[in-house]
Length: 547
Image 1 (cartoon, rainbow, N blue to C red):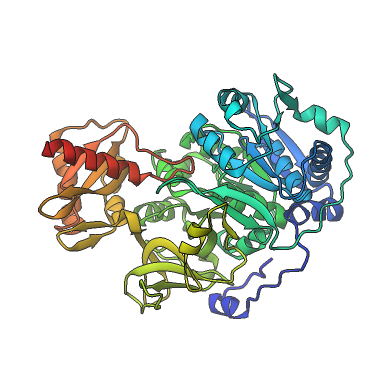
Image 2 (cartoon, rainbow, N blue to C red; image 1 turned 90 degrees about the vertical axis):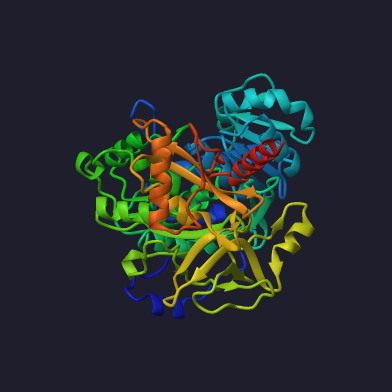
């Protein structure tokens, strides 16, 4: 745990990694608290009717021990892949902790995944067992025959067809289990990339991934772990954001976590939950924060007690940052990373490290730079690729069964993010866009982030995405796909007004020459816009127009 300080430079200078030879995530988030403070609140699970269930660390730990014993009795052991297809719930945390206890590899999967997405990930990972619910079993019933390695199905909704009952398994098992002594580098967790470009890849992490996250998460929550802290995130625990930016760091620090099994983000309900549970700390992805802007006068309507909000997953943008600061009186701590290497840049308002439009500075223990295609570190104000120096404990071990892709991720000792950025004179890094997202128009290289940020400033726009559409004259033109606010109607006059709005605020080469209004934008389960699908749509339009 970082010691609170007011000096960022001193914290960076003094920080050193110190990983023990034996380290297991289950011991760090559960065993230690069950022994040290057994009655400390671990998880408060909120039910749809508003009632809640409290799980102390002792209760959580004993359930995880029972689950570990049950898995071992079923023949699941070290190195086996244990899939989890569950929403936020104590049972999800129990299954995770149990998998780490026996040395297995947890493979979380979003409850919103469809059959094909599940089939691909379960087949690619070679999962031996899956924890799920009745809804998950229904999806699995269609693809089960295509998954010969998937031997065991365990349902939290009780025994059904070929699935075993989660509760019955735990009831028959002992609540004592000695967690396996693993090393920080032993495999623990595999999270699939969101698939914004190409097929998702299994990102394999060691147990060290949790301590690797801690500095960035603690600072993005203004030194998480203060008296009275209570954390909630709407992010699915199947995503690195929900799991490693919220659940596990909080449990490791003894901070209670609020869980709620939501299938869809509801901004109005989010504020009710924050108020009713007296949430002090939140991790809210940028898309969700942008949706919160649609709620009228939230700071006046809700008695909120939060003291820190972290956000990551995509660029937050100036507009959302400025709105939050004005509405609630403190800034969002934006931070940055990838599934492969997370929470390596960030903001910490408590240290004075915060800037509208920036994704932050280096977090303690990480070496981050802007480099060119040869691996040379570029000077301030020079655009290039964001890269992280290895070794780094938060960095992934490998892509599962993809050695070529693993090698291609590195240039010497630099891990390539595929994200374009620029560092300013004060050390803040500003996100420009994914390599794939950069728009080339009349020799200009244009990042979509600034355009999208400007678009959502327009009073009629709720969400927006900008991509490059092939053009014979300019190589590409900027095309914007826009979701309007509920009370707005698409028409030519509004389209012209939006186009002029952007041109006047940015430049003549950045305004969208084409605008298309949509009911929704294609998004990953983690709330990122899949610009690849919009680019494909734009290319298809170009081909149709040419023919």
